[in-house]
Amino acid sequence: MLSIEHIGSAHTDDELALLLQVAEKRRHAGQLVLDLDDAGASAAGTSAVVVGTSC
Image (cartoon, rainbow, N blue to C red; front, side):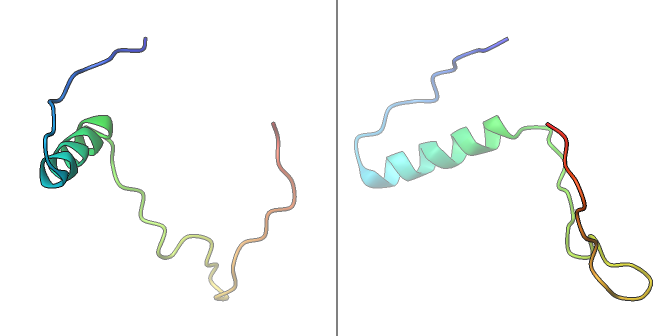
């Protein structure tokens, strides 16, 4: 379900920047970080190759 939440009103660029940070944190609240630093590396040190996709 879609919901709309008012986070505040900005009167300056600094206030707007702060509100955008708050909105981004609320948008991703509870979402875990996916660590992709070593993703796709096999034991041989080569990267994975995508051979097909599904829509």
